[in-house]
Image (cartoon, rainbow, N blue to C red; front, side, top):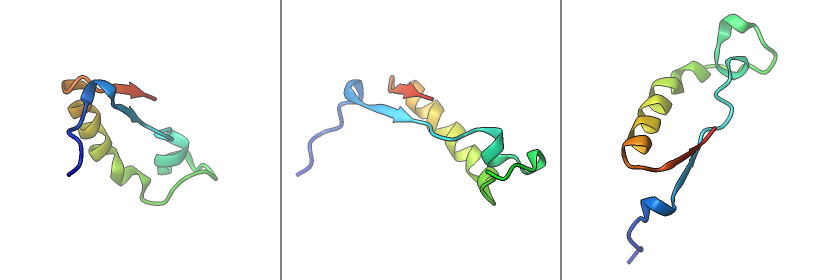
Amino acid sequence: MAAAAKWSETTMLVIDMQKDFVDPEMRSPLLVTGGEAVIPAVVEAVAVARKGGIFLVW
C-alpha cells in the first residue's frame, strides 16, 4: 500500500508558463502549439495547491 501523502513535504513546480511558450500572439519561435489550452488546468491546480498549503515553485 502506498504511503499517505504528506502535503507539508510536497512541492508543486510550475515550469515554462511564459508567454513565449503559450501565447500565439507573441509569434515566438518557442511557442508550443496548443500550449494555451493548459492554462485553465494550471490555474486550477495552483489554486488547489495553495488551498492545501503545498509549497509552489515558479
